[in-house]
Length: 234
Length: 257
Image: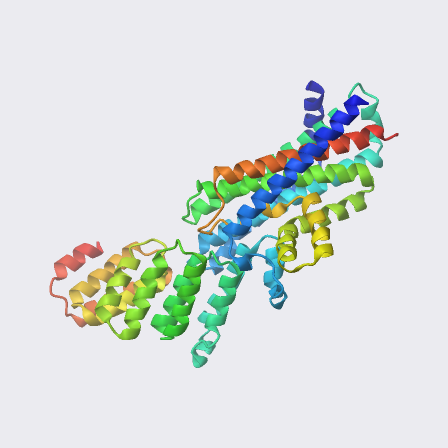
């Protein structure tokens, strides 16, 4: 009888301890995540998101949203409307996974530098900063977009040059910087940039563009120090 | 102790003799390999895609391994009457329960390790960092979530004794386990007293699987990858498993065959 009572008491104590620890760990999870990480009364509006949140695969769901976004942006038919729904795609993707930092930088770069929709780009960066305050690179992009909006080419080019020093920059930034160099720098400096990009980029599209730009500049015959360029291409 | 080890070894070997489980492992390996193909579509985010898909596959297939192991064990015990052969041997019933649980855990751990190694190889191939501690930790959290689910499954298997019943309950627990923290958060903010009490009951009884869901937080700058949190989760997991296994043993020892 005593043995039984002791066993029951120990079991109750252990169950209570498990409940207390469960609460403490849950509080850590709740505090570490933004409000919308948890289901709310408004979550039903976006069922796929609700489903992925509920079953613990929101990061993968955001990847699927990312593929849809790429397909939308890659479809030439949408260029007629200047990719009207692009912001919606990025917004949904970052709603599904707010920690998807690349989505903010890539999306903002397209919106600001390709489509000149600065307000949407700034909103996106602000959203990124709200949920990822520690991801300081977003401030770079914010600065570059604001300078671009004001037409201060020198300052925004400087910030883009800083941005491409980091491995996780979107490839669109390196292509854009090359286009700026084509206009603002000497042919020697521009071709050296493209050669360096051709050698270092991980992006196939950037590599193709770099090669075509190198060939085009060489064809123009405006290179002063051909030896240095040829040496760099080896 | 030796008797527990013998049962665990028997269950472990039995799992690998089972063709369905072997096919499941092959399918899991194939699914992780598939992440290599699907990541082609996610330009510039290939490594993230591989990691997300791989971790999802690991947690899903680990859960399916438990469901299938449980089904196979229950079928053999009830339909083929292997249980009566075991309980007439000089082995205490709680030893059988513990050995069976450990054997199943060994099977799941081996499956997870195989899947993790393949995932790491694919991440390396894609140009990512295969030895990223978050990747390894997220996989191990998946193992812990399956460990806690398996203890609940053991309990259900003695209570229900029917294979379909056990599977249905297990899938429900899996779903509820992921939703419980969300429901609790929602009820605390908006619910009345009755709703709160009902949600609290579910929250404390069903294993809280969201605590182990690190695959969704692997990219978050405010992630929970620290020792303090790991300690809390390990404490919760151990206590829950012990309570469940003791309850299972008590019910099992009172059963007549």
